[in-house]
Image (tube, rainbow over all chains, first blue to last red; front, side, top):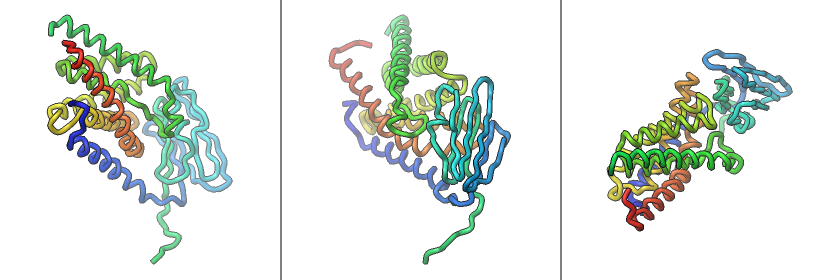
Length: 125
Length: 171
C-alpha cells in the first residue's frame, strides 16, 4: 500500500541528488590558496582579512544582546563562541578552504573564505 | 466529516507537531552528523498526515500555527521566517506529489521530496534575510541528508496511516 516504493520515488531521489551535485559544482572550482576572509554583517562588510600563517586576530561582533567572537588563526577562521540559541555558527567549526563559510543567523553575520588568486602552482600533463 | 471534528483534528495535529519538534530538539543530532542545521524533521509527519486527511486550507492553518507556536517556544524571529518558508514550500510540493500516490509515488518518497523542499525553502528565506546568495553552499549537504531523513519520517507516516486503516478509524 502507501509504504511500498514506486518508480517515482527513485526519480525523486535522483532529482534531489542531481540538484545537490549541480549546486556543489561551482564551489569545487574555487582555488584553495591565497585566502581572504570576508566578514559581513547584513549587507555591510565589517572586515576583510588576508590570511597568512602566524596571523592571529579576534573579532567581536554584536547585534542586540547576542555577541559573536570570531577567531582568526593562521589560515583558518572559526566562530570561537556565540551566545545565540542555536549555536549553528559555532558547530560549523573551522574554515580552512576557499568557498567555505559560517553563518550566524541571529546576528546576520557571514564569515566567508575567498580564494582571490587564481594562479596555478603546477600543471600535470 | 463535521466542521467541529475537523477543527478538533487540526488542533490535535498542531499539538502533536509541537511535541514532535520539542522531542526532536532534545536529541542533538548535530553531535552525530556534523552538519550545521541538521534535524530529522518529525513535524513533517504531521504535515503529510494532514495533507492526506484534511483540506488544503486546513493543512495550511496547521502548518502556519505550528510554525508560529514552535518559534514562540524555542526559536527567534529569523528562525520563524525560515520555518515558515520551509514548511509552506514542503507542504505545496507534497500536496502536488500526493496526486500520484500509489501510482507513481509512495508516502516515503513524497516525504523525501517534502524534506528536500523544506531545505530549499529555508535556504531561500536565508538568501532573502541575509541578502547574499552564498548560503546556497549549505544546500548540497542538506539535500543529500534529506533523503535518509525524509525516508525515515515517511516510514513513520506510512505506519500511522496503515494502522488507522487497520482499526477502521474514521477520521
